[in-house]
Image (cartoon, rainbow, N blue to C red; front, top):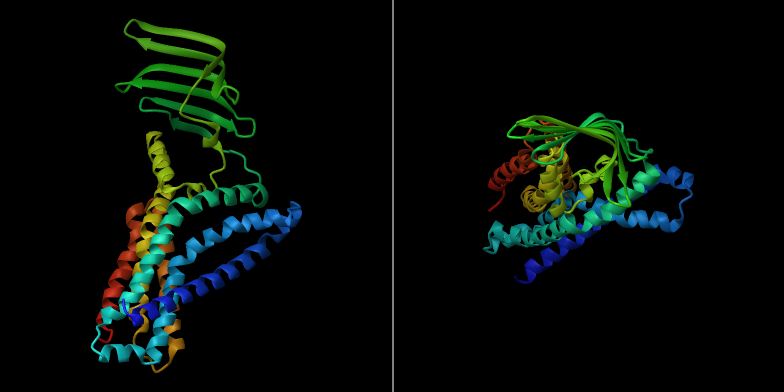
Length: 357
């Protein structure tokens, strides 16, 4: 890298950090205004509130990183263009790729840091943020689902008529065990109660029916302690749960939910694919920003920046729509997450062909 590359890289990264800072400040002010009455209502101390925003700010930074990188790129490139610096570089014998090089390196730095933070560091902070919001911001949570079913393992299924998450008690429980798609055993209990002291479920007023070649064996009793691949945490509030998992934990959770036959895992798949796709989104939007703002405009730098905001808005709309379609099952989660990148990848190629060479 020569002096010019370093100059552009520094200017880009400084502008990126400035834009991130401004956007985070705006979001924090709006968020504080909305939640201030909750803070007062719960009589939270200054340390409590600062602790919340300590975990909230990195979360916001991760959300705005692609768009802020794009806006910073458009601003810096438009500035270079309006000062005729891009034309000077091109007339000196350098190619347009040479101009992109500095921005590309900057986007790689941002993408790598973003991937590490989103994959393993921010989720730990999100645990604190989500716990705070559940305790002080959101309304009290009650598990309200009826006729709940879990696939406990490959051959066993658990059915609950209802569950009280405050008392950790399930009512009218049935556990069925199959072998070669044939029912081999069935257990019914009036209640299933979680016992913290032994980390087991306690069945109350239970009755089992075991089937074999000779007939069936029926047993019953008042109490029975048992271990299941289900815990009280499975009935806890799942508010923003996907955001609290690292990538490794997301993989484990998705596999567990598949084993249980759960039909609501798309949101966790989307979260996983988003974290993988975001670094590529940063790089793509930075390159797009360069090709959009590199042409000198008679309307001035403001026009190029405004054009950048139009593209940023279009990207956000496409992302929100594709995610919504994935969450309701209309689109495959993997395809939905990558669809905006694919669309804007073609836009970038088209715009690149129109840039001065």
